Length: 125
Image 1 (cartoon, rainbow, N blue to C red):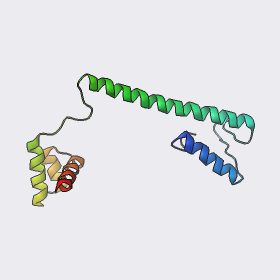
Image 2: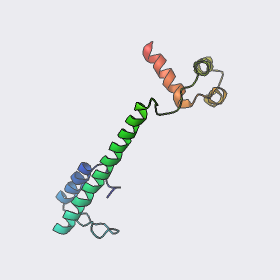
Image 3: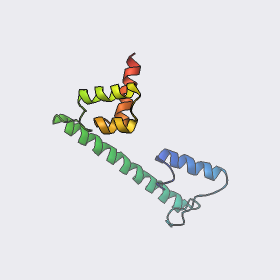
Image 4: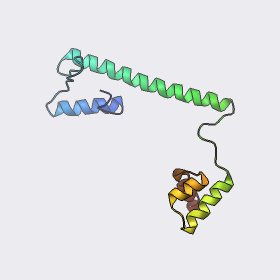
């Protein structure tokens, strides 16, 4: 069931669409997953609700944890690169004499970060 859709709403819409086409959902691995009977539909609904509850709980705990860390003055993610490394990476990129691999190895600025800095420069020009 977790592999069938990304959300409970999508799961119910998908099962409803399948049933409108004249078919039913029945799992070969989980005997309770069978929408051909009222009991199977009930179990499907209960387990879909539990799955959604678990997703919401994980999301809530993650947000609480991040808030707690921020309240203690910390910030998530990797530390920022030194401005001199970023400037060097941008100069190397502009010169067109270096490959991206050479730039990232030489400066320690990742490819993703380099592209983000380039995008920010283009955006503000």
